[in-house]
Each structure stands twice: as structure tokens, then as C-alpha cells.
Length: 193
Ligand SMILES: Cc1cc2nc3c(=O)[nH]c(=O)nc-3n(C[C@H](O)[C@H](O)[C@H](O)COP(=O)(O)O)c2cc1C
Image (cartoon, rainbow, N blue to C red; front, side):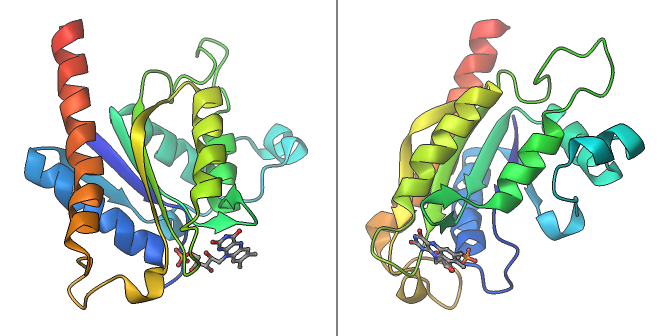
């Protein structure tokens, strides 16, 4: 079972990247093979259909799309910007949603994937509003999203030096986003075998 982990922030001290790593640890402990992606390594211009017509889909998007195709699950941590998921993620997903050739079914890379989502914010809401919108976006792309999610508020005080969360229950809940996703993917694989 392979899981692709993505954060919607490339900020050096990103709370969402820290949160994502806790869920990745949970998935790995459950037995998943996780690829942690750093979106700074997949730079893409703002989606522009004229640019796409002139130059095609950027190499970074083609590479990331192939990576997505090769994984069954997604762990996504996204900041909330004015109540919406990070434009970095939306932009990447828009590029990844494009057909590379006429034979490829629409949303080919996303269809049938299962995702667990989370967010972190220095505010009290933890980015929960953005997760509601992220869930809708993923649904539109053909991705099933697990019902459990975590919106971590007051993130500036939440992490220990070693990257774990001070709150043990929260640490378990975030780890479970990864392990439950792995369990779901394993069940799905058994069903369709
Ligand atoms: C343009 C902008 C809009 C923001 N809107 C929200 C918001 O709606 N809700 C929230 O909790 N935090 C909001 N924030 C604060 C972010 O949660 C905070 O910058 C956070 O640290 C970003 O995530 P990161 O730590 O993973 O980089 C906003 C920040 C920016 C720059």
C-alpha cells in the first residue's frame, strides 16, 4: 500500500508540514510505504489555459501526476487561507487534473484514491473551514476522503522539539489518520483482489 503525503505549505517552519509528518509516522508504523513530497521541488506556474496550449503541462506536473498514479492513498495537510485550502495545492491539483493525451480518462490520476486530510493554524479554529472546502475539491476530483480529520488549533504551541505533539490524544488522533488510511486501503485491496 503506497501513500503520497503532501503539505499545502512550503514555509520553512510550516505547522502543516509538521502535522503531516506525525500522520506519516502513523501510516509507516501501520506498514504503509509513504512518499513524502516537498512541493518546492515541483514548481508549477499558476494554471493558465493559454500557457498550457502553448507549452503543454509543465514537467513538474507530469512528474507529480505519475507519482500520484503510482500511489493508492493520500495524506494531505493544508493551511487555511481565508477559509479556503492553500492555492499551492489547488494549483497543483488543477495541473494534475489535465489530460495528457486523448486516450486518458478524465481525472485519471485521482480516480479511486483515498485521502485523509488535516490542517494546522496558529488560530483557534485550526483551519477546519479549509478542510470542508478541501473535502469538496477532492470529491470533485474523484477522491474518497476518510470521515475523520484533524484541525489543529494554536499550532505555534502544539509541537515538541522532536516534532511530536504535546497533547498525547492529539498525537494519537493524527497518527491514526495515517494508520486508518492504511487499513482502509488494505481492505479495499482485499475486496478488489
Ligand atoms: C493570506 C492568509 C490568510 C490566512 N487565513 C487564515 C484563516 O482563514 N484561518 C486561519 O486559521 N489562519 C489563517 N491564516 C494564518 C495561517 O494559518 C498561518 O499563516 C499558518 O502558519 C500557515 O500554515 P503553515 O504554518 O503550514 O505555513 C492566514 C494566513 C495568510 C497569509
